[in-house]
Amino acid sequence: MVIDMSGSRIYKLGFVGCGHMGLAIARGAKNSGFLTPEQICVADLNPKVLDTCRAEGFAVMESSVSAAEHSEITLLAVTPQVCDAALFEIGVARVSCLLSIVTGVSIAYLQDALGDVPVIRAMPNTPLQIGYGSTAITASENCPEDALAFVKALFSTMGVVREVPEAWMNAMVCVHGSIPAYVYYFTQCILEDLKARGIDEAAARDLLVQCVVGSGRLMQENPGKPLQAFIDEVCSKGGTTIQAIGELRDRDLPGIVRDANEKCIRRAEELGR
Image 1 (tube, rainbow, N blue to C red):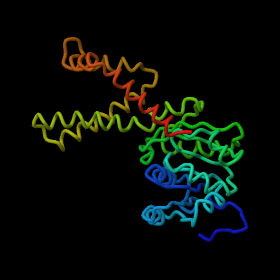
Image 2: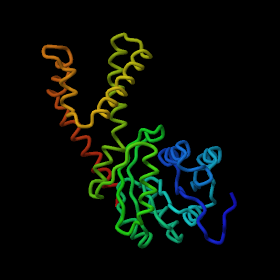
Image 3: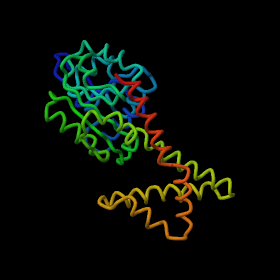
Image 4: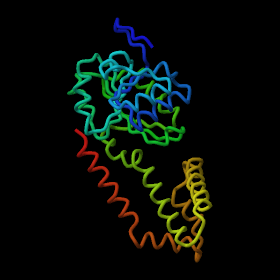
C-alpha cells in the first residue's frame, strides 16, 4: 500500500513490534473479520517477522515512526526491556492514541514519554488467537470514547474483555498473561505421571486436553455457580477424587499458587515503570 505522505492516517491499527502476542492480535483481528489486512500496518526490527507479516497481507512500514504517524491507534507490542527505546523512537511521531500491551508499564510512564497522548493499556493472553482469549483493559482519563470502544470491540472478537482499574493491571498478569502456562504445566505434570505408569501418551493427551476444555466450558456456562460446587460434584465421599484433592490441600496447593502469583506480580513491577 502506498503511504499518503500528506499525513492523513490510513491504517486503523499500527504495530510497533510484532512478536508472538502482537502477531496473535493482528491475526485475530484479520481472521475474525474485524479488520482487513489492508487496515493493519507493522514495524519490527526482525526481518523474519516482517516476512511473516507480508505473507499475512499486512502493510510493512519502514520505521516505527511511520507506523505511528499513519495509524489511528498505535499498538505498542514490545518487551519491557526495549520499551524505552521504542518510546524514544516514536516520541517524535504524532501518535493519535497508544494501545500498550507492555507488561508493567503504567499509563503515567507512557504519557511522560510521549506527552499527553491518550493511552489504553491491555493485558491479553495467547488463546485470543483462536477466539478464546481474555483481556483486561484500562484507559487514561483523556482517552476518547470512540478509541476505547474500538479497542473493546477488537478484543471482544477474540474472547472476553473486562475494563478494570489500572491498579489491578499488574495482578492481572497472573490472570491473563500467565494462567495459560499454569494450565499447560499442570496438564504436563499429569501427562508425565500417566506415561510413567505405562499409559499411551497420545491417548492420554487427547483425554486430558478434552478434560481441560470441557471443565472450562462447564464453568463458563454456569457463571453463578460456586467453584466449590464443581469440586464437590466430582469428589464423592469415600471416593477416589477426594483422596487426590485432600493430598493437594495437605501439600498446600493454595499456598504454592499464592507464592507463584506473588513472584509473577513482583516481576511485573520490576519490569514496569
